[in-house]
Image (tube, rainbow, N blue to C red; front, side, top):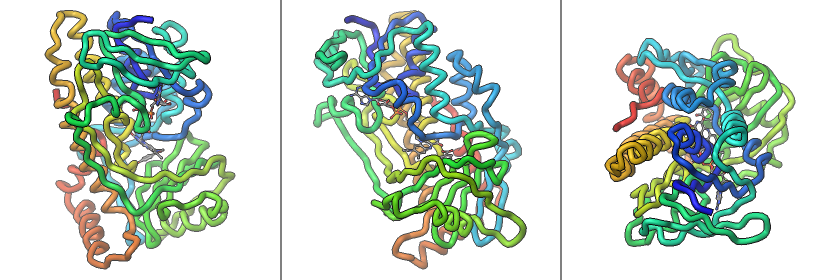
Length: 391
Ligand code: RFL
Ligand code: PHB
């Protein structure tokens, strides 16, 4: 097989890039290791920046998002049994939209299979040969045999555990990493959300987040120690702990319902530099991951893809590689800003396992500043709703 752009990974980054390329008249092939059912069911992100919504519209993939996405005007911060509303339109003129990653993936897969370039499921990339040459080759396993895809360019959109990043020679790779001493226990529940907007709570026992998937389905997260076993968290224990962490002085109750999914996710910050080597370009989680407290992972994957799609379109139109040459630097500017914001939000809202009294005071002082100062609130709102693309 031969194509112009070989895309490894059929997550949001790879699928959205394929849509953009298809619309620009550039041919590509997407290789996805898992089955369609698996990628459409993987529970992950839910909060979309305005720029992400705009990108999905530009790609012609927003029909259901336009009808079903829930537009939110802000978030609520809870601490010290108080609630504080951060109003995005007043502070930034922007809003955010709740629409599940599972639904974005379903929409993109359906479009791709209907009229897009090839998308192969159960096609696992094994290696990328000659990324420095004009014709890199992807070796992959499909229908029981090893096959090859010869490309002009290869995009590694194969997530944090993919193979693309490891193709960079050690001499050119620089990695930056930070672990955190806590994880998130995430649940999906068949119950109407108990709030209109997302609630980020710094409770006594630790962090909790109330999000949602639809007017009938709630998505909630609880800070738990690393290596926690979901089996140790029967449903009643989860609801009791969530209720305690969201508790405020005044009227508010957390409605409970049947829990339909439960999983534990560790938290990590990771950045790989550069994002390009020869004719191999990384996009999304393959190059960088952030703890989910700032809701930035999917949004960063989408902004990488916007920059990349523009660069390929310019190459196709004019023959210039100028935007491909600046791709890595352009994306990394934004990646580091999102990494900083995710780190700050994580540090501000999670209980320190060692109960550091000084750190606790620092967290409260930061939260008090945000709720007391319009400038401090505007800074949070600008980052949360998404910094502009730096092109
Ligand atoms: P993905 O989604 O991991 O997709 C990569 C795809 O590549 C495939 N693959 C391979 N295919 C072929 N050959 C190989 N050798 C392959 N190796 C891997 C995989 O099967 C997969 O289909 O990466 P992508 O596209 O870069 O997208 C990134 C996002 O998924 C991720 O950043 C977000 O989910 C992060 N995230 C959030 N981001 C937000 O912007 N807002 C949120 O509210 C938000 N909440 C979250 C999150 C992530 C979470 N978890 C589980 C880590 C909440 C959670 C709990
Ligand atoms: C989600 O809805 O899954 C979600 C929302 C906001 C976050 C993280 C996850 O910060």
